[in-house]
Length: 117
Image (cartoon, rainbow, N blue to C red):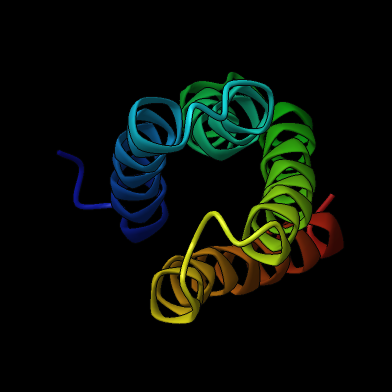
């Protein structure tokens, strides 16, 4: 895996999201919410990867912004899953802590990069 912290963290979060969605589907028979979470949670890393592989600063900023947007959408799905009592409080707090860390990193990257355009 890359030495770039945001790439590594977003990839690890995507893997964690995949595992959580598998549990939601297998143990709770929850397919709709798990698909939404799977999409947004893995798209964070997808857009980060596109950003670092991009060919321009504008592309970088745009894709990092999309990654941040997906992190915000993921927050919504995690909250909904938690309030539906499909996750216990400790599980929710753990994955939400990771999501917040990534969102903060992305916010800083986007703000700093937009200033350089």
